[in-house]
Length: 63
Image (cartoon, rainbow, N blue to C red; front, side):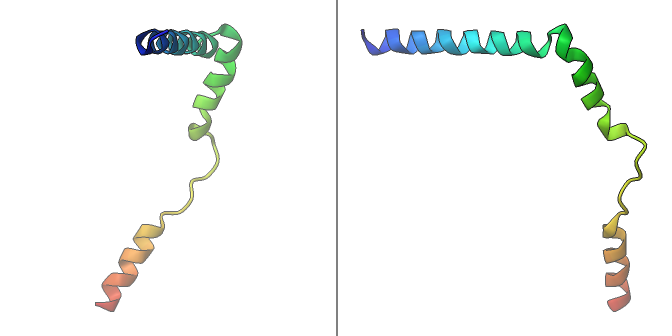
C-alpha cells in the first residue's frame, strides 16, 4: 500500500464519520432536545447587570 491509498482510506473514513454525525444531529429523536437547548438564552431569568457602565462612570469621576 502506498501513501495515496492510505490517505484515500483516511479521507473515506472521515467522510463516513461526518455523514453519520449529520444524520445523528438531524434525527427526529434529537430535534426536540436541540430546539429546547436553542431557546435557553431567551429564558425568563433576569440578566446580569452590566458592570461596564459602573466602571466607566467611576473612571469619569476620577479624571
